[in-house]
Image 1: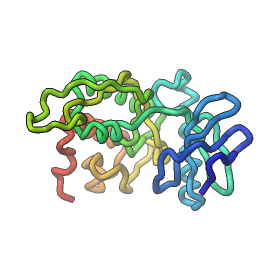
Image 2: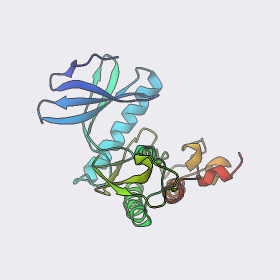
Image 3: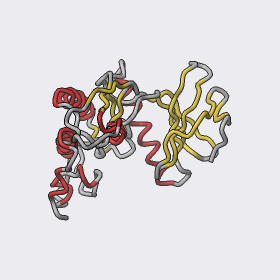
Length: 242
């Protein structure tokens, strides 16, 4: 879609592809004005994706207005239209909780860390709900650590027959600070909704049963996430046949 070194704007230079996705791509770019790396979400030039991107921008600007210190949700820096692609400029963050688990061989987090992540996540959800926003797609992929830094510590629970260095050590983030991303599916919590939302493993019962949903679907997703971080071996909604 874009060439390395290409200038998306006079101040935004494309450095590398950060993450491909169904919505488009996330690029790692250099902001010449602020002299910092930024993440640029480039949305596919299809009507439904462009509309979702504009809804996300509205939600991000509302969240940014009331979250002045940017401690809960990813911060939008700017946005622009380039070759019919909506491009949203974000602060650069660390890996998602999902990516961290994957690189950690899907080993559960310590309970103390899960407790702290849960506190931050619930505070973020409460903040969104106070603004009448329902995220609708909370999952480990949409929760990012602020910092990419981590430490390796011995994992004494590894079976004695395993000699892999990766298996003998596990990663822990140096900082537990997290932020929620991906607000393209946010909905007004004061309105009645009955369409399907949320990734299947984190989908609330009322959504599955078609009973209509509101703020509570986010709370269910948070519960599923916390169970997964403690156990990793299974995700609660998989117990439900639908």
